[in-house]
Image (cartoon, rainbow, N blue to C red; front, side, top):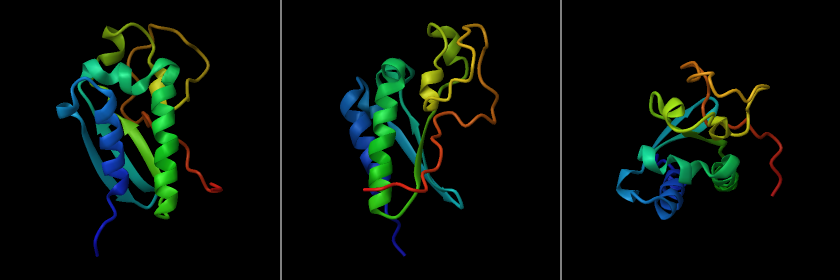
Length: 130
C-alpha cells in the first residue's frame, strides 16, 4: 500500500520557498493513532521566518496543511523543531511557535519548555468543514 506523502511534500515546498537556506529544510512524517505528524527542521537562523510575527506564518502553514490533510481524509499536525537553548539566546519568549498556546504569563525568563510539551502541535480538528 502506497503512503500518501502530499502533506510532507507540501510543507517542504512552502517552507523552502520562504527561508534563506532551503537546503537545510527537512520534514519527517510519522503516522500513529492520532493521525499524521510532520516534524519540521530548519536552520536555526530561519526559524523566525517560519514562525513569523506572533506565529502568524506558522499558523497559516498549519491551516493550509489541515486542508491538505482533509482532502486526503487525514488529521495532520505540524511540529516545528526548536534546537536546545534556542529561546534563551534569541530574544525572548517564542511561545507563538507553539500554535497559539501561550499560557498565562508572557515572562521572558521561563527557560525552555519541558521535553514532553507538544511544541508546534495544533489541537485535533474533528469538525473541519470545507
